[in-house]
Image 1 (cartoon, one colour):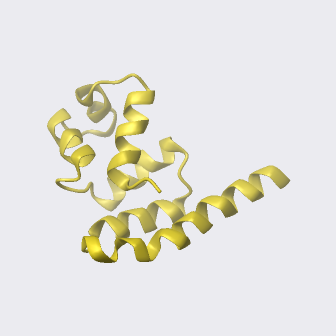
Image 2 (tube, one colour):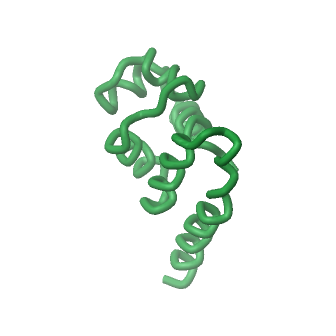
Length: 97
């Protein structure tokens, strides 16, 4: 399962954007994106929800990923199943629509 930092980096690189260009889309600096991608700091929930929406992350899963990133490392795995369920539920609904 990817974490919040990996999602940000993957989305940025798939879009072919530099950290500065990606940050400009969301009103933050390139160094801030660098820190998000390395997991040194986490974006605010509002900023993460904007980024995750553009990444196609279901809102419920995005909130859980953000909360998971705030947990101590030894507890982060506790949310993996719930996050996977939110992703899989979204995909199932998309296939049946």
